[in-house]
Length: 426
Image 1 (cartoon, one colour):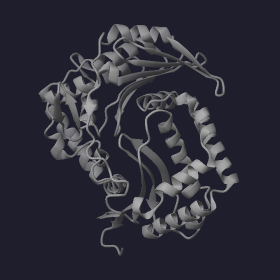
Image 2 (cartoon, one colour; image 1 turned 120 degrees about the vertical axis):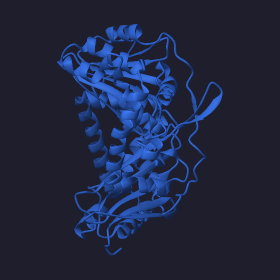
Image 3 (cartoon, one colour; image 1 turned 180 degrees about the horizontal axis):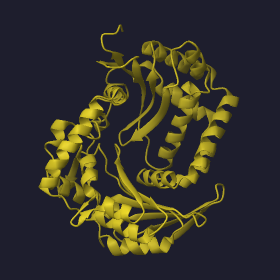
Image 4 (tube, helix red, strand yellow; image 1 turned 180 degrees about the vertical axis):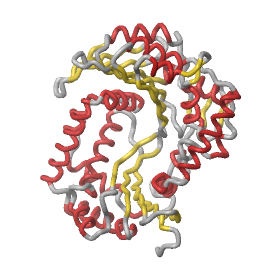
């Protein structure tokens, strides 16, 4: 087991790789009573087409999310109940690119870790339980179809991308999940719930070597090579369409503005892209930016406004959205401000202030065990270590941020999605 020190932030991290390919990261916190364990697979909603045993397979939209729901089932009952009975708080989530299972607790950590590793690695899916779950998830999907925030976000993705599977809702559709069977779940579990495609991250008052020993006892001794995935045709640098519109029961127009970028290479480039993208959002349209102050003062934005950046295999973008009486005017103002910043540059004092603020947020995030473990897992899948962020902050320059704004905040790479009030004037 390798021990790594991060003196700038007062952290240390133990890292081990098992013979089956599983990576384990442990951040010891001896001064805390609670512990947190996060067991994740590099498999999410976008992973619908893959090659296994020399054959390309297409699976319905929503399998990764469906699998997450059913993986808690065991031959003896339900792992959620077992963990809760031990005083732990367990849960799971599925995103576009990963699925993660976790628990937090102050006692019986080793016993709970055994339960976590066991139920995630040993599939137990029956057709009867799958049929029942289709109704439950179908209701969840219908609720999502009625949520304007969800609809406008995916509308933006449809505008940005012509082929990428990130356009597809993580939970799928009522029609797509109707195609899922117990065999589908077993197939995808075999393909993606392999130790070599997974990571275990732990933070708390735990013994790193004991974590490794438990994983070696519970998990399969061998893994298989990662499956090859297909995310569709390579995307054009420009957006698929510049405007997406829909009417729903909303009191005010709701919008999402997307700026399409080319995806970064895995490793330090990925880490730097994420930080540069965050700073670009802050400098261009963040709540401390001149543009935000002006648009807020004019009543074009309100406190619902938010922004961020995301990157996935084959896709990366910056985005911002909220309520506005005139979303088109917001888009035009952002593009004009991007031209000004490209021409004049970002104010040096503003850049340094934004950079310090983001660094402070990252350091404060180390107080959250969940934040440490989830971010380390995502960083691992993207080829870097999360706790190296101080070095990454040092490497990002004002020129990097200006180049990002100049590259993505242009008309041909911008897509606007709007949900208008039903029967309202556009």
